[in-house]
Amino acid sequence: MFLLKFIDYYTIGYPILMSILWSVGAYFSRIKYTKQESLKSYPKVSIVLSAYNEEETIQEAMSALEQLAYPNLEIIVVDDKSTDNTLMLLEQIKQGFSKEKELRILAQQKNGGKATALNTALEMVSGKYLLVLDADALLAPNSVEILAAELESSSIIGAVTGKPVVRNRSTLLGKLQTLEYVGIIDGIKRTQTFMLGAIMTVSGVIVMYRVSSLKEVGGFNPEVMTEDIDVTWKLHRAGWRVTYNCRALSYILVPERYFSLLKQRKRWSIGGLEVLLGNFSWVMGGGDLNYKLLLGEMILSHLWGGTFVFSTFNYLVATYFRQELHVAGGVVVLFILLSILLFWIGVNGDENDSQLKLQDKLTVPVYLMFYWLTNLISAISSEFAVITGKTSKGKWESPDRGV
Image (tube, rainbow, N blue to C red; front, side, top):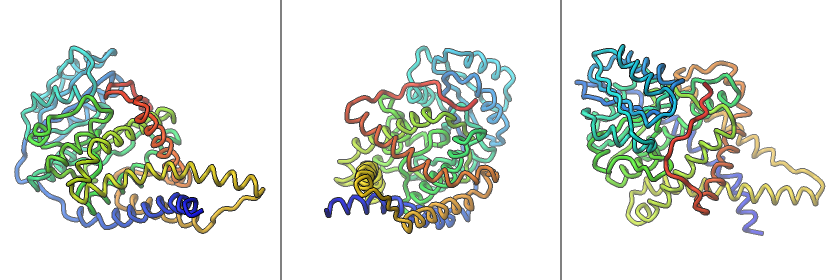
């Protein structure tokens, strides 16, 4: 009986506790952003895009890069043996590209995945810093300077990630992910940076690395599902700090079909489990307390997935035999209020960077259920995949990006 009550309390208490922590951390993180670091000089930045079958998005992404005002850039695009017209389009773009920016197109002889493409570019970059973007991402004009300024501010920062902003919002799923990035993902990274001085993972759609730190840890691992999560923890282990700056924006495309979204989130969750298993002994043996807390929260989130399923099943069975439905109204109201508070803090900190419209905000009630349900499904499916060994290397798939 005690165990059943503990499971029920944990199932209810975990999301409430995390909502409180994220709300507090996100609110007070504004202290970090009241004073922005500025550059005294402009260190060279190498922007790297890895592309695979990007013919529908590459033109727009390259146009955004051409408009950047940062004065000391090189741009490298690695075509990872695309089977569409991506390489041909890149060659055409290069012909008319601004001569002030160094643009190189690298064509891989065989498809090796994103990590392999990034490692190819890493061997050739001449910049002090390396900015990795997705080939469908539109970089905000001042993001390069913001990220470079943070790396310049401390020699122990090995990487700094920016804030993804969803730009395809024509469907309900697109709107829900917009709110998720603004109200939860941003809040989590703000909280981790403010409270722990370290984040669980960089966002692969916009992250700037110190080239020396990246080379020190051996670059990107092509044998894992998520090279961005993996390299974050390689940097942690090597003594580098990895931080987040919400002022650096990258406008991204997200899946607009639910099963495509679940596939993406399952891949993220598997990547997290790989990091957990690969770093558990180091963190628990002698790692910093902050890393113990980061991995500990991941363990608790996966534990919550199991307790939620058990509690729900137990509740339905009990309801069937009692022939009556009992709902803890006070708990439900508290959770909704906390979630709305977290969303409000996220919107307030967003400062209209995400350009939320009224129709986006009206989906908040659906978004609360969407976030926890999606994470529950992806967590359980990733656990099954890892236990059964049904994971794969970081190979490309043609993404659902709503274009």
